[in-house]
Length: 270
Image (cartoon, rainbow, N blue to C red; front, side):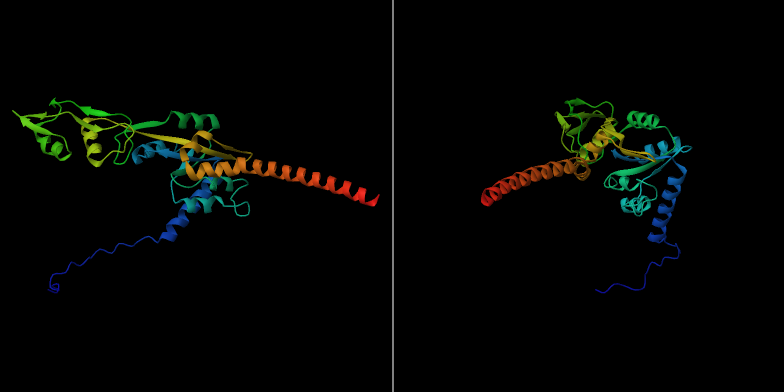
């Protein structure tokens, strides 16, 4: 049957959408302003991002620093992708590391303070679906006295073999919630939350640092970035060395052949 046209929902609100280009342009302007107001810039990466914890860190550093987690291409454009369009000398080097789970920190804090802050910062939280379990959690058969009788349907829905025995939630058989090293299912993540088991740690790692007279790469942060960045670092550091060795080898071979050719010419002239 055709749809009835008598009852239609009509939206009366007139919300003006922000054009994406305008929003991105504002981020570029803010980054360029931060470049002028701060003495150094860092690229950092993170594990198990938690927005509230990052907000707390932003508030802590508000007086001396500015953190950006925007689109990677937007941040690259603001910094400059090459020496020709970089905002300041050497800033384009940061752009190469801005991909994946990464962000920018502009600060006036001394280098040692920034490194200590990132080294000591961590926040424990409940793991989410797909996270890797850091330990095996197994529940033994018997009463689960930490749960009220109202939780029994929820626990049953999460796959736990439970029943109500005189108003007490009881596990009728041993149950493995998760195994160390394996991804968490949605049911396992929910169960760990109600059990109060926190398996996720929000951490930040410095990848590289820029200042007006220096540029440094942090190997630990680079290792956490993984694939693309490790390969970039490999190309940046080791490929030039390999090419240099190859050039030297070719040069030695050519010199050897020229020497041999010279001997043949001398013999022919005699």
